[in-house]
View (cartoon, rainbow, N blue to C red):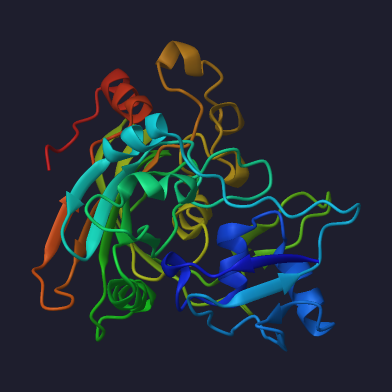
Length: 326
């Protein structure tokens, strides 16, 4: 058996989250299986995935087959920490907002060598606590990512991200995307329920429109500029927070995001066989451009925008699209 002790950074998080953060090799299904068998113990007692851990508690769990202990959280080097500090767009006593680079996962997992979670040591600054992740964006989506500097802020921000609907106070998120085609009308909403879909080839699961059993999903969109209906620079606002929502919604209205090979947006698949000549790289063009956070814990309203990644800047320039300054 292996053991782990809950440190101050992980105080008051769920037990399954503790495993995901500290032992990403211990898959969620395996955690649940061992909990059902009583093989994972919290201070020697049986536990559930939803149990919240407390600083100093000891978690006992089985080694992997063959006697290998699970891979612990990888700590960042000083060079990596210095790099992470360059991403900071905003910092106060409760939150840090970074501009997550394209291609960097937020959390560890299969085939993930480095993630934002691994680099949080570099963002402690004047405190002894690692910042806490409050939401996620896809590995190949760049832009604003909000981190909490303490447990109270983490709870408040997570609740704001979970809120949806006009009657609730929520965090306002704005994305920019380059899409194939151009939506008609140029301003509107996509209201299509989403659900996980099974693939015949048993590859990684995808999301899709499911009118019968899907969860409510709503996206507001606006065309900022377009090129002969072949490409459009879009402003997208997810009014709900479903997995891959923006990517699936744009694909569903026949305007998949450029470079989105998972949802029909690859340049070749969409008919742009001369991508290199056009000057548009065939990788995902989705950027979390702006976040507006209502006052939390007595603080001020926070409004932060993230500069575009290099590949999106190059694409907009090559296509002659008019990119707003703000």
